[in-house]
Every structure is written in structure tokens, then in C-alpha cells.
Length: 336
Image (cartoon, rainbow, N blue to C red):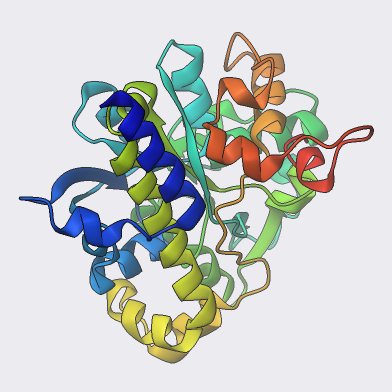
């Protein structure tokens, strides 16, 4: 039986949906509890839900939304969900604490930026002690990016710790646009784009300036136990996500019409956001080791993975590859 499961897994990974009809003939669909968050980064999950892509793979998705990567991490640890999407930092914090999980897929490369309405704040040096900066949660991508920027500009990754307040993206955007309670918001699309279109609002810094190159804003994470015990479900999950990504990339206008009500935007505005410079719907992973190395140096985690194999499943390491001689471009993009 175990041998047969491995054969099925290999076939699914190679051929994508070739075994989907076989799964559909099962007596009942396999339930899969999926944890997401808020924002345009989760467009593939929204598309998959509306197009019933997971159902075509013989799965019954149970959709759950959380306000931060830390909350997704806890849901995975508790067994409340089977797979979840979170930033690389929350994933690494859990891995460092002993969570037996790995990256199953990269999940979207997007612009990330620190926005303010204050014309006097042009760099991190201009923030005063009482100027509050909203991030989704401690240990989030935005928090770690802010720490990286603080180290670069202010000499310490902890220089702005007292300025940080935790807010889910929708609340942070509402507070910044109303100019109440916070001076800046480190956020993602569509909130980033909405804020930048406000008169007088501007970027203080962004992901490329801080990290040096694009990185996976989120990664899909699964427990090793899930991967080993439910290999066909794991493969169907990976293939369904890839199909949702491919659909968005090939159908931007239709995707915009579908997603507009989710964000209470017009289809035209949603299309503008989907095609904004830097938006890249891809399952390829970027930046895994770069975050790990910085977080170890700054004290957020106690160790760095010895190799990608320690933190990513084989379908991910196959995408990254291992070029003889000098590293390939995608290998280099794992580092800062």
C-alpha cells in the first residue's frame, strides 16, 4: 500500500491532474483544511475557491482566514488546519522551535512597502519615538523587513521596536488613511496600492530596497506528517495551487472581475492592482535562506538551515535545483 501511494505521488507530481478522475471516483472527497490571510496575495486561494479547483482534484477544501502569519502558525501547530500560508519569517520561527514542517510551495512575489502621510518622514531616521508603525504581527514579514532596514539605516535591528503596533492589514490601512493612531503602515496589496493613491501619501522604503531582490511574500506550509501520511492529498494540493496561479496569469481581466467584490473595488481598479509593477503569481520559492541568515544574526531564531532540503519538500528543491559550479540564478535568489 505504501509503495502504491508513492507511485501515485510520483505520477501526480509529474503529470499534474492525470489522476484527478481516479480521485473523483472515491466514495467521498478528501477534506483539506486550508489557512489563508487577507490581501491580494491570496488571490490564488480566492480564485481556487470560486472556480472549485480543489474539488476537481477530489478534495473538499475547508477555508479559514487568519489575521497574521503567527496565527496561521498556531493553527497548523494545533492541528486546526492541514496546510497554511504564511510569510517566511513566521515559518522559520516555527521551524526553529521544532515544528516538523516544510515549505510545500512558494506563494506569490509582491511589492511590500512602508507608507506614511507625513511629509517630514522621508527615511527611518525621521521617525520620532511616538510615531507608531503598524505591522500585522511580531515576527511577520513586515516586522522583519523593518528590522533589516533599521539595521541598515539606524545601526540596530531593534531601533524601532518601540514604534511598532500590531494591526491586521485592513485595520492598519483604515487607520493610516484616516490619519488616526499611526504614522506609517508596512503593508501589501491591495492596501499598499490604496494608500499610495491617497494624496500626499508616499513610500518610506520597500522590499527591494531592503532585501535587495524579490522574495516569496508567502510560502505554503505543510507538516512532514501530512506529507508522509497523505501523499496523494499533498500532491493534489500542490497541483491545485499551481493551477490557480496559472489561471490568474492567463486570465487577468476575468480574475479582476471575479476578485473585485472580495476587496470592494471596481474590476478596473482590481485589474490595475493585479498588473501593478512587481506583482508575480508564482509557486517558485525565493529568499528562504536570506531571511534565515538575517533572523539568526538578529536573534529572532537560534539556527540557520544547513540546506534548503531541511526546510522544503522535494517538489520545491526540484524547482530550485542545484547547478554544478557556480549557483544558478534561482539558487542565488534564496539568499539576501
